[in-house]
Image 1 (cartoon, rainbow, N blue to C red):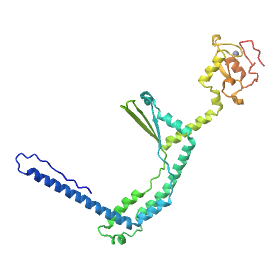
Image 2 (cartoon, rainbow, N blue to C red):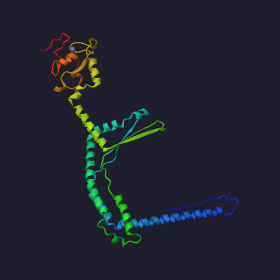
Image 3 (spheres, helix red, strand yellow):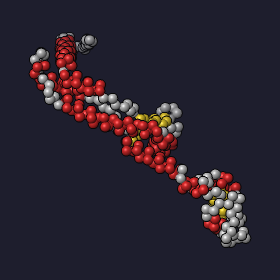
Image 4 (spheres, rainbow, N blue to C red):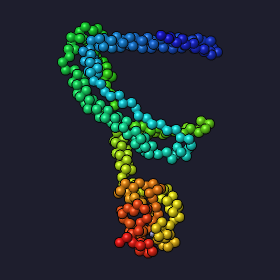
Length: 307
Ligand SMILES: [Zn+2]
C-alpha cells in the first residue's frame, strides 16, 4: 500500500497560515478516499471469495468447460514489409492473400474444418451453458443464509458476472488479416494498413485457386501459349510460316501451333511449338505429323496437300 504525502509549498506573503490549512484539508480528503477505496476492495474481495466458494453454478460451468475440447485456431495474420513507398501504394492485399492461400491450400482446408467443427460443438456447448446459467434448480436461499454481507440478489449478480467471464469463446469462423507496412529509411515516416478477410472470403479464394489449378491442367491452358513463349517461337522461326515460308508481309496471320496437338498430350514447350500461317494451320486440324511437317491443305503456296 502506498500512501502519498502531499507537501504543499505555499507562497503566503501575509503569513496568515491559510495555505497550510488548505494543505491539511486536501491531505485529509485524499487519505479518506484511499481508505474508502481499500475498504471497498476488501469487501468486494470478501464477497467474490464467498461466491466462488459457495456457487454450485460456477462449479457446474467449470465442469462443462473441462468436458468440451475446441480446436485451437490461432489468429491468422499475414504481414508484408514493403521496401518503398511506391510498393506500399501499389500493394494489393487481395492478390497477396489469394496467392498465400493457394500456396498453402491444405492448411487452410484444415483450418476451415477446425472452424466448422468448433461451430457445431459450440452450439452444443452454448445450449448446456444457457441451461446451467438460467439458474433454475439452484438453492440460493440455502447458500446466502451462510454468508454475512451478501444477499440473494447480490450473490446472483456476482455469480452471473463470474460465469459470463468463464464462458469459452472458441474461434468458430476463420479469418485472415493482412498487415502491410513501409518505413522510410530514416524511420521518419511509417505507413501501415491492414485488411481483414472473413471465412467467406477465404472460401472464395480457395475456390478460385482450385479453378486456376484445374485450368492449369486443362487443354485450354495448354492451348493458350503464354505471351512470352509465343514471341520466342515466332522469333526462332523468323516470323515466317515454317511450312510455306509466308510472312506478315504476304498479308497473312501467323499462328503458333502445337506440333503434337494438345488433345493428344502435346505440351506448350518450345520444341513442340512452331510458327504456321493461318491457312497451313487451319488445314492441319488435330492431325499429327511426326515428321513435324504438315502437308495438308495450303491453298496459297506450293506445298502439296495430303487430300
Ligand atoms: Zn503456310
